[in-house]
Image (cartoon, rainbow, N blue to C red; front, side, top):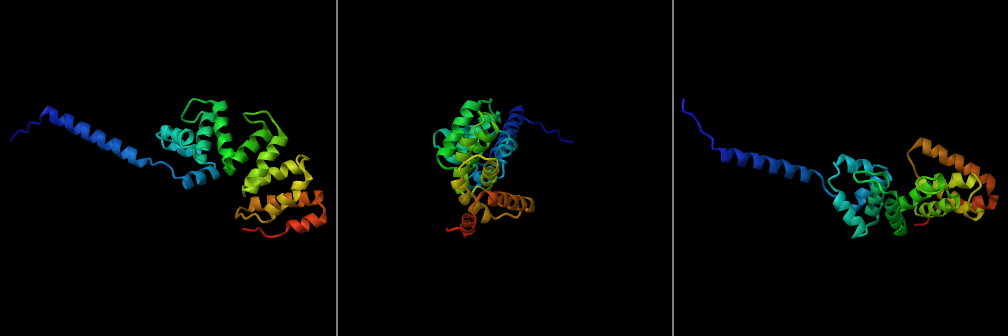
Length: 210
């Protein structure tokens, strides 16, 4: 039988080729998120889990889009990563800075999170009135999570009665296929009715205007 001799350099070449191919596949497997995709992940509270599942490969890209391009969804993502030490060293102060930037740019999820953090004293000092301000802004932008939390604060005696009609109006027009959420909305609406004038309740039961 004829003996086949493989040159050592050919073995090295194969190793480099296979490694390069594997690395290229790995890079191709992780694509940067589009703005719409990222907002959907944020609304599902799956954004941090996605970054981890992508093996933290996009950290530099995320930081650049938050810090240099100042894209609100990426500011929120980068802020959350810093706040909780996901794929980076934890830096809550810097994290809250970026989350506030996203809120300043009108990202509903950022406004909702700031409201929730101030309501519960998470990472920041508890401040119910400040929470109401953030949650009201997020609620006006259609964030249902913010609307429910705002209802809890109003029912507990925080906020202004002048805002009850707006909140009732938003909850009355809320759309959800979650039966538990639907029931929760109905309960909060009944609670708000006790705090409102009947005329205000009737006024609040009007359709949303596009």
